[in-house]
Length: 190
Image (cartoon, rainbow, N blue to C red):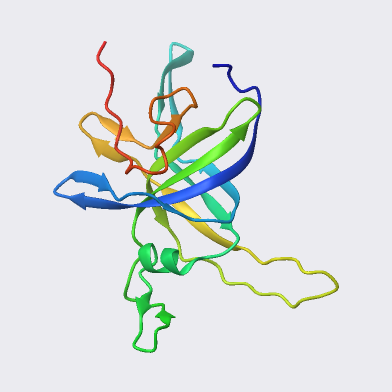
């Protein structure tokens, strides 16, 4: 299959709640989160350089995942309940409870390319509370969006600390990527 030369587009956002029990990490089946607008992630970590013999003698890179934000058209009730632990009240409404922290989840999404899409899973996403903004309607209607900050941290398994995985259109699980629960990678044997 031909490789992409460029990347554009952002779509097919799904979330899969993360469960951690006695060091074992599993994920629920992904649920759609419609209305993807943008995703911006910056790498976290640093490069440490040790100088000796008048050269950069040793360089160590530290990967602490990513921080950034996601912008969506709307925060659905399912997302409010599943990720942000909103509580269903006796009146049938959803209420935010300051005593309930957001749940970590895997974020699944697709970047469009000139040849095919590439699907990504970020394994452990810790969200901030979403912003709340509303604007008056003027001559034309411009939709308000919802943004939330994301912290993506590595998931330690043995000698690995998994952050994300990309699945190409030629990979075996491309077709079922959004319908089956994510699993952490296993290194191929040489």
